[in-house]
Each structure stands twice: as C-alpha cells, then as structure tokens.
Amino acid sequence: MSWALSAEFTAVPGAEERVAELVRDLTVHVRAEPGNLAFNPHRVRDEPRRWFVYEVYRDEAAFRDHLAADYGATFNAALANLVEGGGSRLTLFADPNPLVE
Image (cartoon, rainbow, N blue to C red; front, side, top):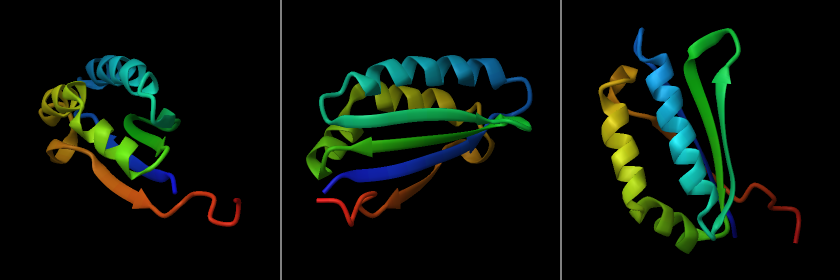
C-alpha cells in the first residue's frame, strides 16, 4: 500500500524566494529516492507565500527511508525560521488508490 501525505506552510514576509530555493533543492533529492512516486510542490496562486506539497511513497518502508534522509532534516531546520508557525502542517492520507489493484 502506498503512503501519501501533504505538507502545507506559509513563508514569512520577505522569505518567499529563500523558501522557493529550499523547496527546489529538496524536490531534486526527494524525486531521486527509489521509493518516491510523486513529490509535487505548489505555490498557492493568489497567495504566493503559501505552499502545498503532495507526496506519494511506494510503501511504508519507502516513507520511513524518506524521513531518515539527512537532506530532509536540513530542509526542516532551514525552513523553521522562514515559515509561520515554525514548520509544515502535515496530513497523512490513506492509500490514494484503494479501489485499484
């Protein structure tokens, strides 16, 4: 069963481009993970400080490998002072294709 989640965060005023740079760098790393099926970051059209990231991993093991990656910890540490609330709001979803075998 695949694992999917979303991450949402809002850059503090003036940090928009630094956050975009961090997201671009993270995207390259995550998409190279063997268990990553999708990593799609989006800026909210009418609110360019807001981000929505949708991620899908092959299975729980792939998701746990993602969590253990050092570049993820580096990203989160750098992001903490650049976003409202000090980090992302995460939502873990059930299997995104429960009716497909």
